[in-house]
Image (cartoon, rainbow, N blue to C red; front, top):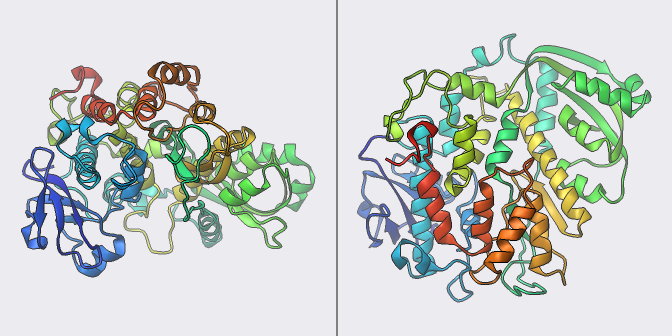
Length: 505
């Protein structure tokens, strides 16, 4: 980004009137009170607490202001994950005095400081990945999508999908409905009473999750209308699984007839499938493969795209073909042909401990499933249905493990699981279960758990199939209430490059 563009945060007292509030132009400056938007510097990109609707109605959606869901999630979600969402009266789980020399000594100011820090860090990572003149408008995923996705003519080498495939894509994509919990109560049993809501969301290791989604195949050509699949359906599940394995770019309209009663409620939550629906539902091959061990399906009809692609291939094709980096970041960082910081294994491994990098990688996979540039409104990105299905099914496997360990699952998808630990189960009992599934645990107050216990449990629960190696340090920081550790890991590793040592400027 241009050197003069700073990244700050401003919170309006009343998002509906969007006049007065508090602002922090950068971590190097001081918080100040503003009376209206004219008091806010024009050379700062401001991350605000305004919703999409408020920004649009107010006319503030321009060069300076970004909505609160700029990083594809509500701003409050990040506050919750970092233990700073409570009021001062309730008591923050994070210690305000542990970071930035205690400059932000109350909850409101700490949220402003953390938001400014996240904004600066994530945009620096974005600029290192794909240099831009200024932070994208609307949201980061939209800005990345415009740069990494090829236009519609290059996206579909055999021409856009025919109508029969598009209608199946639309139906499968619309089935993606992760469950949201709107009511929270702080009733909590066992040690840690009152610290956490009765229902809360725990995110996956977003880096490891993104890496898995980057490899998911989706169809871009070779369109074929299979038609009636009832005969294959009657030949039994083994034959159906063989066919799905041979046709990974397929979608099938199917009706779920029976389901293991232990899993039925979870499947209804995540896959939005109604049992015995007369017309059935369009499901991707990924969903059917994941659900068939638990459910019996009747297949009605199918469509196939035989020519496949993946987000990884798209990213490799989008990266600039420039010289290898020497030092420095941002617009100064340039890369060797084919080099991509989001795909290089050593870079990803080291950066994964950075919380802002975790968020960036989450945004990156979402960017790749967005609208294809220059495509007619009727043409959908097939990556959306298939990658979202993979996200949902990967989390279904996690949810199934939690469910079997007596942890209530209220919903899953979009990179996280909504859980309800059972009453009477102490934190020390259910935290290791989360760790073993590669989840980031809730942020707990410093001193609640001993450092020795945390280190042993995190090490013992390490699952290389679900967690990046260095993320263990981030899991420890969350369990030890170490907001200072989270910030330090980011400062040290967010912009790491293997060929320049620790990546420090």
